[in-house]
Length: 227
Ligand code: ADE
Image (cartoon, rainbow, N blue to C red):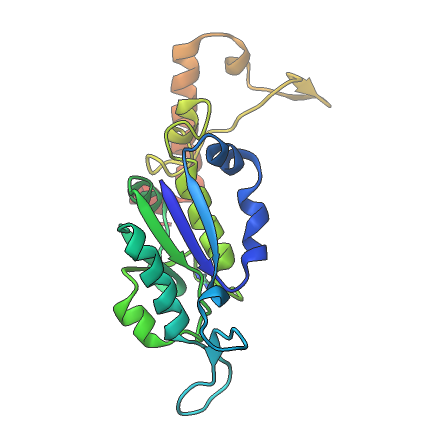
């Protein structure tokens, strides 16, 4: 899989993809992540990517021309399944959408600036707008990192224990059960006996019951129940 992220703040995106699971997935060739500096596609001498809004008003607006040049350059080399724009007014990101996107071959994510992106980019170049939640961030870089992380960990081989991604919270509309590690007792706080008893079917049953009861308590909406 290939994910190309277009940004005016490339430095903000380097370290999230250079650690842990994502770093390993890149090293194994499971995913290629390219961070593309939008300024490289600006044609003016100041390398600007934004300008004043027509009609006046506060703030600057991301110009269509560099974005168009950048996307045209990318699409002239390969076809993309989706060109995603991160925005608080997009479709809410979810595990379901992460699963769907993880099955694509090539993705572009445009990390934009809310309020500040020429509407024609959204109307003509973008295939999907995605929000990571009902709050406004300073830019689309962190959302782009969140979306990429959620996708990459699902790719076959990205996580050593294949089951681990499948048993994530939300994967079956249930939150994950609690987990514990050594010591079995700390300051008098004990690990549930069932987990140290070695009875695998009973442990699986306990985990499922825990998942259901935790989901009912914390997120009844996931079970189709009223909160
Ligand atoms: N850009 C700014 N805030 C955002 C959000 N919540 N989701 C996606 N993109 C954003």
